[in-house]
Image (cartoon, rainbow, N blue to C red):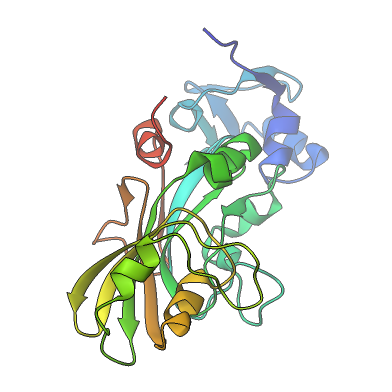
Length: 246
């Protein structure tokens, strides 16, 4: 069994965005931080950082935010970006303001471009992030694609061949699976994530993507009742659906 990490309370809360260590000490001195119903008297008390800590600790009468090691799914809406390199509001603006001051910071696990909606994973756990984005993980991601023109009929064979070359690249794409919905829409399942890959794949076969939505990563699906711009925290069971077995 792995050892449960511990942190000084003032450092824990400061790293979670509740304020400076001095401000955290003021909260403690005012009796505004409790654990298991009892006021914590000293800000230098070491706290076991367990997943159930939000159920046991209160800060100013409210449950503690998720401790370090959080992972969440966000239903990314159109027009919101994952990178400062794109114009527009960032996905981080959809999270609670305090979460933007956390250390380690919350990062997206991969990206969706400004004009793509759907399932986006975020975490402050660097190890988890790299396990998911590593090419060795080979995690499938499913996209719903709407097209400007009807499918020709040979796209599934071309995408599955593993020989398609994108413009200005010198390495063919890995095989991808196309599931036709109707003449102008389909699901595309990828195991890699090159720049604007889905759009460039359909451009390579003479078509144009008019709408793009990711609804699945691994075996984790975006819930139908999770509205655009909303998020929820992921459990260990949820993460097991994302990560490959073993």
